[in-house]
Image 1 (cartoon, rainbow, N blue to C red):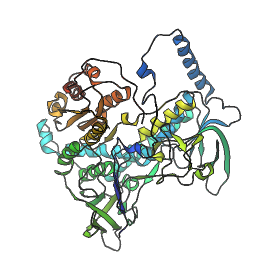
Image 2: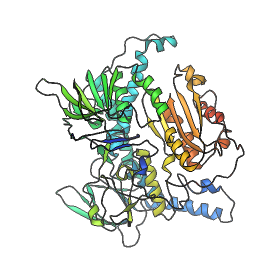
Image 3: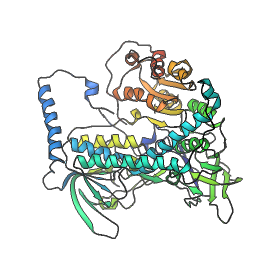
Length: 576
């Protein structure tokens, strides 16, 4: 039996994991976090603070509380980095200075905690250096190239544009310069607040104790009242794939844009694969997707996926093989092309052999959790992920909580998105500062920055229908089109829809999915509504400026049919 694996994911994406051993797990942004989560019991609140649900009730203590909070913030600023708890070097030590660790560090200083962050590579982690940030720079270029190359689109504005071209090195430099700028911004923001940035590999050596230093060099042991692991992830390379960094590459290599191949195979049609197909086709490449499941974009809401395929795949120089695994990929050498051997995903019989210029392995990411000293606190990873509860507290091999040890971001596998890591880090800091806090991951949005963009929050329609059947309620579906939006039409960008999944009986928002111009920016009204527990019968009265794209969402909520149109107090959401 052949052994290999294929999955579809990006750093900000739904994930579809296919093990060549036969097991298949198909997940979207809404259920990425379910893998290592214990069943919650009597959890009180979700994405925002408790005040969001209880309201601002008047109290004789309110002025005093406000003054105390003000004084605490000023004190933290004046002291630079707080004063550590008695008997510890730091109140909080964070292992990993990516977006999650950075968010936690800044919030910790705001809370008056003496904080240190350990980074063995460079500040910013995957997102800033090898993920979200440089990829958006490349996608900004691809968006402009598409517009300039679309003669019909330009003529509709009355514009005449000469043939568009690009300088590959200039495009690559734009991505690298952006990453450098953001990395410096993150570093300076921590330094200015007095966060101690410690260079080296961080390892947990015991309860509330960490060592750091260069491999083979001098190591320093420090103590902390609380420790956060935020080590992120690395590209996942399936068995049978030989990466040479030149002709067979991961997203780490692709972001450097050292070449623009004439024909490139992208293994995996999730967020990473889709975004790079947008970049490569805009720059002139032909693209072939290799997808293990029977349809492209398996992690998206099916209706959105079909429309996206019609716009993002079919008209472009893209073909695809679905229901197949790439069991072996051999880099180009000695004048021979990259060779990709495909087998049927179900029968495992040989299906085809592709000979191409390059192959991008967009099969997701794996947690970076080796060498952390987890064995010193009796913690065993689960498929590489560090097990945590709903409060990001690390769970040991006996199922018990490890005191004062937390894990956030990709390393815990709950939701592999940079902004989810940051939100988890802030949630942990709230807890160690004495305020209980649980994050509702269903309120965290995800986005794919293709042209047009795709965004989502909450449940897909199949997930919502499954939930409704189990819990005994009906669901409603509302849709609006970008073709009815004045701003979209002014931009000649009327292609797209917004979709709302909700409960007609009480107005609860279950999920929102958008495909269209600036979808990634539009999703946040819906995600904040879910986080705050806002019902449709309340949010539909919100006012939106005209003419703006936000009116797509305005019309979406207004078109929903809620049986009970009376606004009422919302029960506190259950955290997940």
